Amino acid sequence: MPEPKYRIRAHQTDSTVTVYQAYMPEIGLPAAREGRFPAAWQRDRMTWIKPRS
Image (cartoon, rainbow, N blue to C red; front, side, top):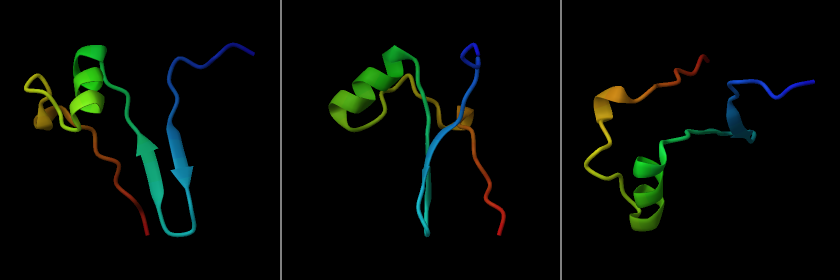
């Protein structure tokens, strides 16, 4: 079976769900190295996952 083009990566426990977000190298690498997003990152471009209870 071929790898899917898109995939959601997450980790679930009894009390939390952590969803991992991929970024382009020019955003992800500085963020991982410096512990904060670089100026190129735009908050208004974020995707929100809305939980249902």
